[in-house]
Image (cartoon, rainbow, N blue to C red):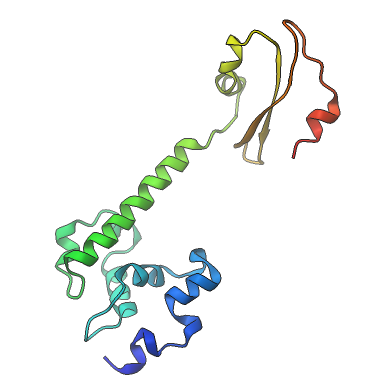
Length: 163
């Protein structure tokens, strides 16, 4: 490997860690993110080249399904780097599933009834506002007013001035 291929010989603004620090993770390419996970290359390959080779062999969808045995047998990866990559893939997958579960979409009156089912046990009337985005995804649920046994007085200003 030539000296120009080593990370330490790249200009600071194009090194993956420094780039992440300056611009954020969302501005890095997949190869740069993977290079950060791998940490080091080999004496023959820079970490960026190793990341490229791994992504060539395992495009995004295949990397999600790669086994420990498959990855650890790639020259320059080994068990420690395999564990790091698979742990990151699994963590990302779990976080995505959790986020997917948390998102609530309101597309019918049944969805509203389900979202407000906790109100049926209350002893007083409550006026609740459901704030949605353009895709009908619930952004927040907010109680504007709690009234009496059978009434809740609400001024339109209180509904429309939600922050």
